[in-house]
Image (tube, rainbow, N blue to C red; front, side, top):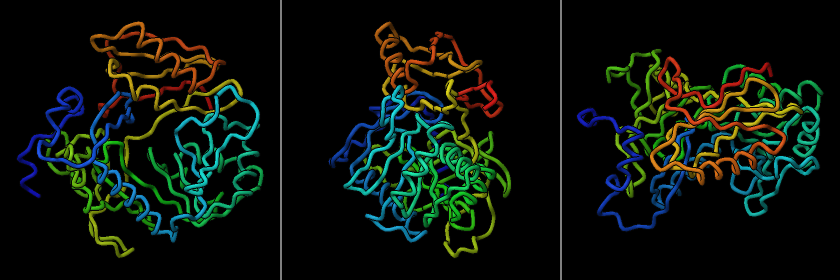
Length: 365
């Protein structure tokens, strides 16, 4: 493993601009193109082998097994994909995937008025597991605690962003069960699974995770550092020492749960704000820029209800067609009730940690 450090880290911009040169010339298996905008809102395209995708989902279900969840158990999902047009005001705001026995809930329609409908649909469906983006699950959990109408599954699993301690406590109180956080990414470069004791286990069958200081040296126990991940399952496009853009805190020793893996104390760097609608819904349009290669970076800023400013740093070739496509995607994700202003800018301000905050809301939620 020490020899990995002889290889310079792989930057996201290199993955974007030198994409074809990172493909394996010897791989002959089935592949497909995958897109992601990640947590920074920047479009990225990469090639996955079918096997890598299968191993990713095997890892997902391996994690669910830690809580006793089995295939075909009923599941409720609060994920990021749009299900119902954002302007729709009549339920249902959910769809049932009968093949996977999964009830998908729309995130775009959660409001103080609709939350009771969501909770009742959850109770009626009786899922063994509830999973989803923690900030949205937290909204539902808060409504459950306020109304006293709760539901107890076997477990709650969260993904896509940092699970905050206060969110964990709210979810545990509302659902009265253990909460597990799952870390991965669209590039399938790493899998870090949280156990029932709260430690984050690096699944070494799928990845090598380094946590590094700005000078490239490994951090000490309890120190925050940048995650640099080497993929072990995508033979079509192996990403070696990839700077994913997230940060974490190293833990020392072993976990009392008995799973003998490297462990992290916490993950940081996946926290975003919401865009808030006039009727109190909280939206996060994270997929708008997944298929916009002419956009270098993007950021949402909301100063007042009913409107949002979208800052876009364009690449060469960006034009009116790109802008129209983005506006169509924004209308689909946000609806027609929000006034959208697109500003073309030269750069977007970074956080102290060097990351772009995808959504900045200056409204008291």
